Amino acid sequence: MNGAVLTQVAGRCALAPSDAARSPVGGSALSPVLRPPAARSGAAFTLVELLVVIAIMAVLAAITVPAFKNIRQEDAFVAASRQLLDDVAGARQYAIAQRTTVYMIFCPPGFWNDPAFPPPAAPQFARRTNLFEKQYVGYTFLTLRSVGDQPGRTSPRYLSDWRALPEGTFIPPWKFIPPTAYRRITDPSTGQFFDVYGFATNNIFPFPTDDTLPVGGRHVTLPYIAFNYLGQLTVDGVNPAGRDEFIPLARGAVLVARDSTKTPQAVVPTVEERPPGNSTNAFNLIRIDWLTGRARVERQRIGGT
Image 1 (tube, one colour):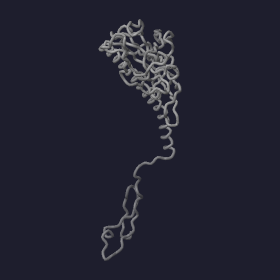
Image 2 (cartoon, rainbow, N blue to C red):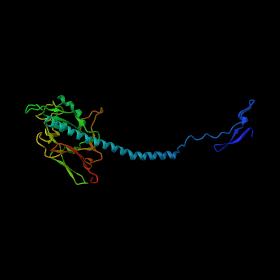
Image 3 (cartoon, one colour):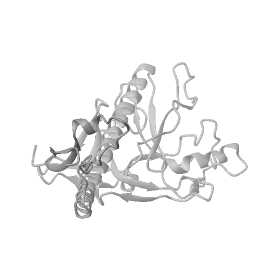
Image 4 (cartoon, one colour):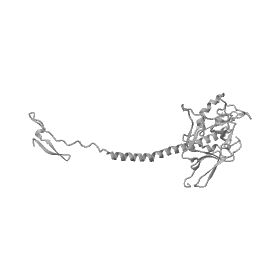
């Protein structure tokens, strides 16, 4: 067949040159060869297959993204609990070591509306901007006396900068009710309940700095808890409180008003619990024993466990 032989290539019939044709002599031309088509380098997706894969990915994303979000929220909740436990323990230890009373002061909503807040002419007035975003999330520590102070004299001193709870957590507004009012939190799985009273308040603390002068004979009224020199909870700075303190935590957001330059404004923030009502129906309480001053976490039990 014109110097060619019939060969089988990859299951197909093709014409291949004979030995003579492979080594032409005298410039004879090589006979044409029928070659097999190029083999597929890999399997390709059809349009239908691609759409199915995209649909599966969308379903998986819809399932997993909320789960990851809940994990991040839970991590922030655990971090907030740990932070408060550590800071409460630190305040108690400092009170014992220095034989003084340590006040843990919380930043209340609308503090600038108090008539005792420093007037615009006072140098402390400008410090309020830094505290607008501390409402419901911020706290610091203060002592009114130190070892060696003369009897009857005070030397107020802040022991730390203002701290804030991790993003996504806050102290719910209902904790800032009057100290004689309370909200009962009940665990439906066990029937156990906790009466959470409002923070104690006082107007003896210089605010927002320790060199702030009183206005009208007093300072801004601030919520607080306190530890005496024995490490016990106290209200008056000396005597034991007589009841445990509960600091509730909530998941969600504190939406601080800001201007076009992102500067916080003098507006009480909007607070959103996510999911709604979680500060009471899925509670997380920092419980401080009044006699020992030691703190622990009380959480809603699931299934009575």
